[in-house]
Amino acid sequence: KAGVTQTPRYLIKTRGQQVTLSCSPISGHRSVSWYQQTPGQGLQFLFEYFSETQRNKGNFPGRFSGRQFSNSRSEMNVSTLELGDSALYLCASSQARTSGLQETQYFGPGTRLLVL
Amino acid sequence: GENVEQHPSTLSVQEGDSAVIKCTYSDSASNYFPWYKQELGKRPQLIIDIRSNVGEKKDQRIAVTLNKTAKHFSLHITETQPEDSAVYFCAASTSNFGNEKLTFGTGTRLTIIP
Image: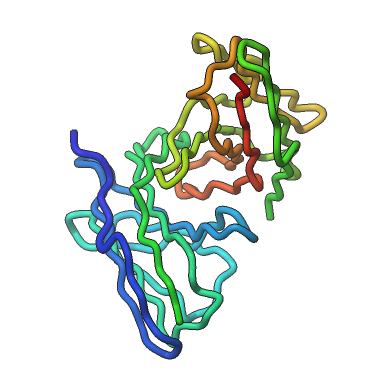
């Protein structure tokens, strides 16, 4: 199976702009989670989507939002970009079977966002 | 919410020796503990995971131990090789349907000295 893919891989934006990042999960995976990775804060959970619904949300401001489509592909949007939003944004997918047990999360290569 | 602490932040080990990385978690309801390896410029990749109904799990040179009472778990790498050099992250999750959130430790940069 193809792995998790993310587009674009690199982005340069200026403060105040908005950005949309895309994530395509592994075929058959229904859950997509998003994480922000920075040298100072490490890997921090943004939100998780399952069946087009946000199930969990981390401690990020409302400028960070996301959605999931019927084919499980997900997008995240950051509005009114700030310098501190510069980071590697990773998405991860998992099967999320009905057993209720945490499934392995497989990460995409990430989108590196630089805000100037 | 869950809080995961990871130590040490950097670790240098002679090739062939063993490396141990330790994590503690705060939420006693956490029951799934994966370890990820991230090489420079690459995505995190799962190397081993353990659930709370198991005290130890091994996969070739890699093992993870879990102490639920003390709320800590450790990664053990034996016979280290240069390709083990990477940043390792521990994570914890309260594994129930509807919660796919991983809380990560701050990472350990492991360097294998040839």
